[in-house]
Image (cartoon, rainbow, N blue to C red; front, side, top):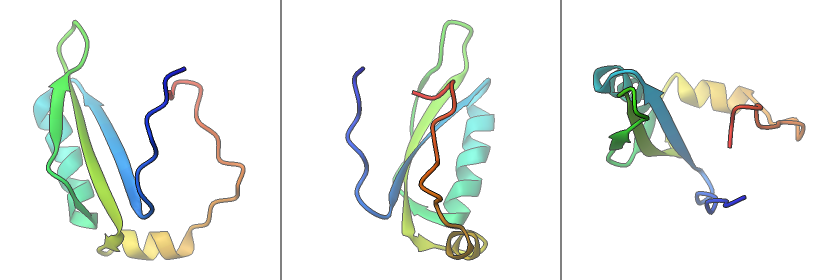
Amino acid sequence: MDHEPLPSEDHAEVRIVAATPEVARRVAEVLRRCFASTEQRSYPAGREGGTRLHLTLDTAHAAEPARTWLVTSESTGRDQAHTDEV
């Protein structure tokens, strides 16, 4: 299986797949209100249409409410990918 390199520490790569570009942009806008981010990149998603949007979030520069959530959440070390994730 081909693996992409991990993002640098304190960063997260986010992929949004939606039926329309507008829906993907709305989700990205919510994330950008919580975290500093790079410019989004969008691509077609499948033959049926749809949009796949990618952006990188800087979790070291989180705004509320993300900051509160990050401080209170911990990884248990048992986190696993869902069966539909690559």
